[in-house]
Length: 307
Length: 263
Image 1 (tube, chains in turn green, red):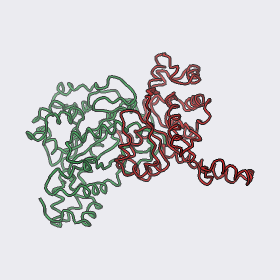
Image 2 (tube, chains in turn purple, orange):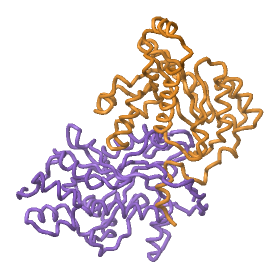
Image 3 (spheres, rainbow over the protein chains, first blue to last red):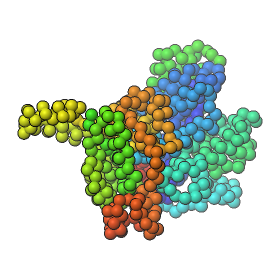
Image 4 (spheres, rainbow over the protein chains, first blue to last red):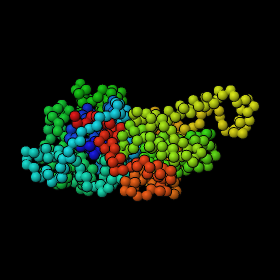
């Protein structure tokens, strides 16, 4: 596929990040690797968006700490950045509104980012080429990507079918124009840019809990934007997909990242990290990055049991 | 205070809108009675940017030259277009600022201007501070300004540098640049260097639209200066074929992300 025909993606992850763990970073890296492997995407940025303090989860430390820890965790990343927009709002924001905010923001600034007004920061959305002019990529054949192909394929090729149909439908663009801002995606000249929600399978599972999510919000998140799911803790993603009608309806917009189920990162969690900190458990170094640990020790966060 | 305006972009091709931007910016700044705009620089991007449909720099530079032939203050600079690799705007601004400083030094050391003449010049133009080079303002749209306010998007020192020089932002209806300046600490600090110009008469001429009209054999007269229309016709620029240029390659700023892609 021609490079410019690939979908350019920004991965957005919402959550408490209380604290941010190595598992979170692993989630970003795995998702990017997987999307690139499909040959249909170029991931140009990752955004970590910690939730507002008024979310009301017990034990949620103030946003200024959570933001700082996130910054420390990605300071050596050249593609993931931390966005404080949610934290700066008057009150808690729905996932839907966060996605929409970032999409609308990207619509307005994409042109200038791609013209790269500035030398990118160490945690940019867009970076600066390090090498000489890149080689011309080979033109791959455009695979059939109609959603119905998944139903036609048998069980054996179902996962293959999911890969082929992974690309969100193109029919939203009726014309090619400069900075066309139609619906969920953005366009800068020929470049299509989408924001996808990145999450663990636990969030996907929460879609099945009745009453937790507004139906209209789920439609927007899955139908308009699209999600990239990194399974964790041996989750049965197939069962989850079958359990929710919204998820079933938009399978082509749900990209399930294939990761080694025995990967040590799949069992890391913020909860385990907080417990490890409270109990002075040395395993915490497996869960959290050193700069984050140093910050926690310095500020005495999580040391007393709360919530 | 003397000011030089610089606009970066593809100029593929240059249109009347681009030229109007300079005139609007100059009027606005001179209305404040604090600034005297002495020069405008058009800096077309190099071919290394690899944007789809971007025709050769030599044509884009020539069209910009033809467009500014009748102007007594706007000119084209080829430095950026001559670089082998794409150069981001901050570096272009830095380069031009260094040139302005160097020119200032040379002027100051010019022994042929007599003491008496210097004193008379200073009396006539008391605002001219010969120790200071002219200010260099980036001429741009509201999206650039807004992007500066997005946390962690750019290196803070780079935003400081560009905002420190100065930005003239031409805006149209639909955007609220005062709001982003107000909401961003960095921009707020530099608010005196950020000049917002409202374009009351919207000018929707876009280079993309012009190229599309040309591909369809339609007239683009009065969207571009006459000399440019003639040049486009004589050189047979902008066909369906030229629009496919760079279709197979990655836009320069995104190249490093594509490198991480499939083998």
